[in-house]
Image (tube, rainbow, N blue to C red; front, side, top):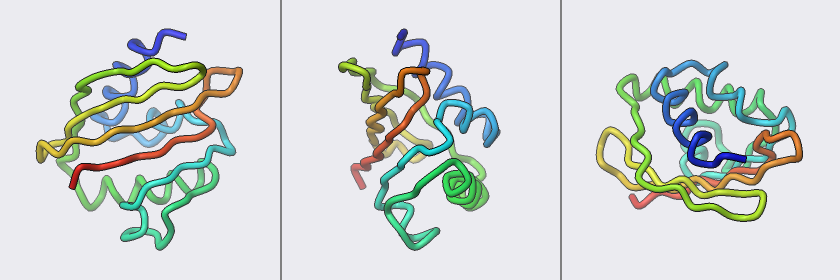
Length: 113
């Protein structure tokens, strides 16, 4: 898998604000963890693309100027870490684990602030 190409498309998908384009990277039964989800949906662990669509739809609505710039891509075995900065220059990292079909089956987001 070309992790750099994935990160480029991941960034472009987020910057497009298209939930379909963003979610195209994730398996239907993905597990996603983020402390920021607590504020919008009341839980830090989400299961499935429908839950992600709800959370990320709310997040995009609350932040219409949301944008990401990838800082670095770290390669692992069947997984990667994307570090990036958002429109407020806040550093974050997304750890993505992939299934055999190349879709994300598990993701965790960590933020500096």
